[in-house]
Amino acid sequence: MALSPDDLQLIRDMKQREFNLKKRQRASNAIYVEARRYRFLLILLTALLFAAVLDAILILVERDEVSWSELWRPTIVIFVVAMAVGILAGNGLMRTSLGRKLLANKDRKLNFKYSGDLHAGRRWQQFYYRGEDISAYIGQILYLVESEHRFESVDAALAFAKEHSRQNPAFQERGLELFNKVLDQTNLLVIASTDADGRPSNRFMRFVKTDRPGVWFMTTAPDAPKVHEFDQGRLALITAPTESGATVSSNRVRVRRAELTFPEVADLYRAQAPRYLEGMTEEDQQCELVYELTLESAKVSNWVDQALVVFDRVDSVD
View 1: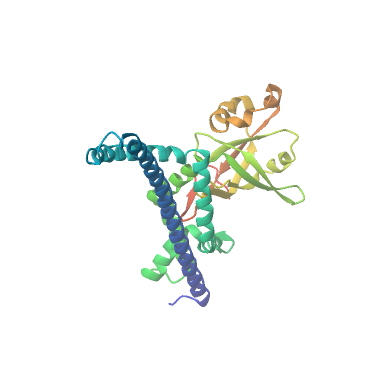
View 2: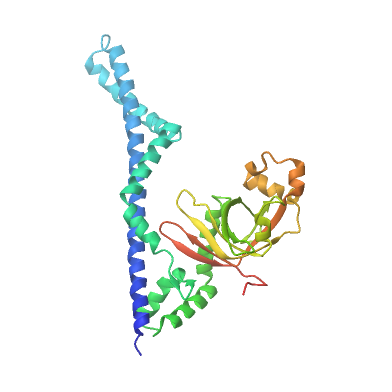
């Protein structure tokens, strides 16, 4: 039995998505290579300039006392040593405000140069099928349907891919590795929730990780407008993008008031978001409400990669 017309169109759309994501990956690789090359050239130019200045000083000082036949050897030695020192100086320059500004300007130019391919891939990053984002399974679906001809419908291939992903430790480990890598670089969330009348709203909030995977804490003042929304128990979130554009997002999140006071989680904030405590009095800390976020699953995305992490919960979300 051949694929239905609807499934054939889905497969064509999936192939188009993969094509655009590959263009995005090539653009991202090109940006990385060109940025590295630019940094190397800046360091090399710094080293050459440093070596040239030292050699020029040596020649100006010694030219009247030493013949040219005797001067060329120390000139070469000083040039080589100065190059080595200049490379170290160039690396140090990249960490100064001037160096960071030069690299940031180059990054902006490269992002503009490759913006078409980057944004083409971003538009295709999510792929919804029957209200569900199945982007994490598309590679497997195409392989099962197009290469192996193992299934004759997208639904069957999707069901197999989901089940196989849950049973495959390597799939889960890779997703969790990417998940933890992103969280090591940010402690800022965008929280999306709705009020009692269904009006949506977004808010930036700090969060801290716990020793349980996918379980975080966030706090808020008891009179904040978000309290009533959080007490409804559901929200969606996305972390602030890292420097590489990586994010963690989820709309399968439970939220509840934790049976903890702020002083009991203050050490986590001191370690992971120390500035959060600046300006908070002891009275403020005692009044602060602590909420526990429990992710049932999360999607990890960056410029070139995407993974789905599913957390094993005893009382999972329906």
